[in-house]
Length: 263
Image 1 (cartoon, rainbow, N blue to C red):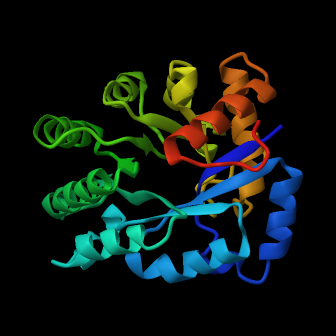
Image 2 (cartoon, one colour):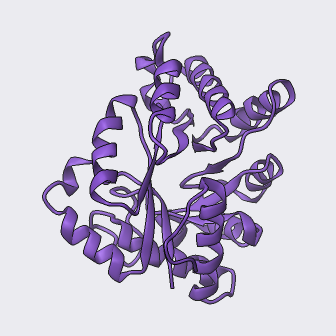
Image 3 (cartoon, rainbow, N blue to C red):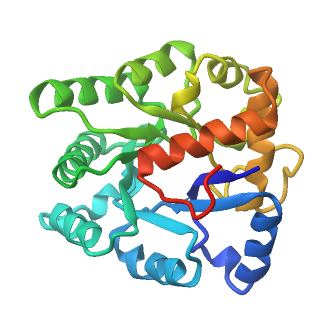
């Protein structure tokens, strides 16, 4: 059984000094590939070094919506140049909208639109972060699709309800579930996880955040994606092997990944 963790942040300080044991655990859990997200372009070199160390790691480059106050006139060009500089870059992001405590919503929209253009120019998918902004995000994407064309991508760490989930499925997005889907009170997320078509479903950890049940209280890590996949399997009344095969194939398709040992 093979799994792909489609969203990690193993460059964070909490993992430093423990990366070899981290790899051993993800291998034992059946994780054969990881997609490393990026919250700021200045992370690029460090993530690139991790990919040099771990051949099973691909990565993205972008600017997180919570960091858009750092957006400059040349940031889009910087992201584009970095993305084009390494064939292991499989996506732009993470980008998106986060209105949880934001007073810079218009700036977030502009940064998102700019990163969508980079993704379209480079023919790469986008990794989308969305928190308390689903309606606005739908409008921004719908307008972009109509005026500039569609872009492939994934709604990462998805926490939306069934209606919101259908919005982004209709826009062509993949939907990725994190440890949130294992939480007892995440009823709307669990309901939505049942309706995602099998060919659009992904799993992730978003480590080091959001450790799934039964690992709550621990630092999240790539090996824990097994628990996410198991919960998704339970919700969809499928076997863990079926979910692993589907989500691995989907990740390979979206991110154009080539596994040495295909599932």
